Length: 217
Length: 266
Image 1 (cartoon, each protein chain N blue to C red):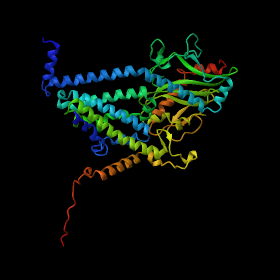
Image 2 (image 1 turned 180 degrees about the vertical axis):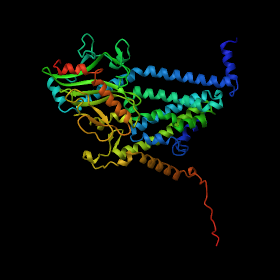
Image 3 (image 1 turned 120 degrees about the horizontal axis):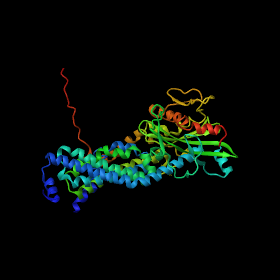
Image 4 (image 1 turned 135 degrees about the horizontal axis):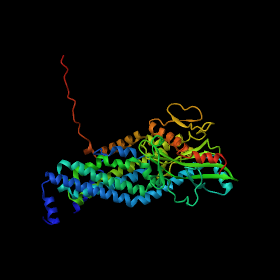
C-alpha cells in the first residue's frame, strides 16, 4: 500500500505534468492572471482528474480498444460539465471569470494523458492517487505562476493589496506585461529552467548533434 | 432466457473486440454520463438561477448608477428602486390584478397561454413568440415621467440576448442600455456587455420627429444621433442588438405603450 504514495508524490516536482511533460500549458497561461482564478481552476482540474481516473480505471478491462478514446473523452467531458455546473452554483463570480476555460478542461491533454498512460492500466486506488498527484502538480505550477503574475501585475494577492501601486499613492509601478499572456510563458519557462538547473536529469538530450565536418579544399 | 445477472456476466465476459460488447459499452457509458450530467444540472439549477437573478438585479442597479443624477432624484423621492408595472403590449395599458413581483417575462414568452406567435415577417428579433404582458420600470415625480426602463430580448449570434433599455422622459433619447443576459461567443460577441460599447448608447435617439424608428447599429464610423458603431468582430451580435431594439420599439413591442405615455397617460 505504502508504495502507492509515490504515484502521489512523484508528479509534484520530479514528474511535474506542466514543467516536465509540458502538458496543460494553454490553461496554465489563460487563467493565471490572478491567484484566485488559478486556485479555482486548479481545484476544478484536480477534481476532474481524480474522478475521471477513478471511473476509467474502474471499467478499464471492459473498454474496447477501438473506441477507448471516445469512451475516455465522454467520461472526462461529463465530469467537466458536472464541475462547471457546481462552480456556477457555488462560485458564480469566479466561474464567470474563468468563462470557457473550465469547459476547455475536456481538451486539456493532461487529463486525457493520465487516462491513457495510467488509469487504463492500473487499479482504481493507484489511479486516483496518480490523478490527485498530477492535479496537485499542475496546481502547484498554477499557484506559483498566478501569485507572481498577480503580485507583479497588480500589486495584489487574492485581491488584497501587498505592493501599493503609484495610482493609489504608493511606490509600486504595476508591471502591465505580467497581466498579458506572454508573461505566462516567461514565468513557466523560468520555472522549468530553475527545476532543470537543480535536477539536471530532467534536461532532455538533444535529438540531433551537429557533426564536425571537414571542408574539402 | 437467462436471468439478468448471468446475462450481464455473459456480456462482460465477451471479448473486447466483439461488436455487441463495443456497442454495449458505448451505449452504457453514454447512458451513465447523460444521467450524471442531467442529474447535476437539474439539482443545481435553483442555485444557479438565484445567482443569475441577483446578477440581473445588480445590473439594473448598476445601470441606474450610470445615469447622472438619478440616484439623487431617487433619494429625494425616498425610493431605492424603480416602480415596476405590468403593461399589456397589445393595448399599451397597464394590467392590474397580477403582481409584478414574481412575473417572469422570459418564461411567459414560452407559455402558449401567456404569449402570441410573432408573424415571421415581423419577427426581426427572431424570438418566435412574445408575451402578452411586459414588466416595465418607471420613475416619476409629481405625476411627471422621469425615466422608463423597458426589458427587451432578441437573438444574437448563438444565444438570446436580454437587455434593459432606459429611455428619458422624452421617450426618444436613450438614457442607458444594459445587457442582463447573453451567452455569445467568448471574446467576440461577449463584448456586447463591454461597458465601453454600452457607453456609446446614452444620448442616441431611437426615433425621428415623425415617430419613425431610426436607431441602428452600423459598421464603420457611426454618424448622426441614430447610429451606433458595431462591435468589430461581432457583427451578427451587434446587428442582433439593433434588430432587438427596433422590434421592441415597434408595433409588436412597446409602441402602443410609448404612445400612451406620450399622450400623457402615465
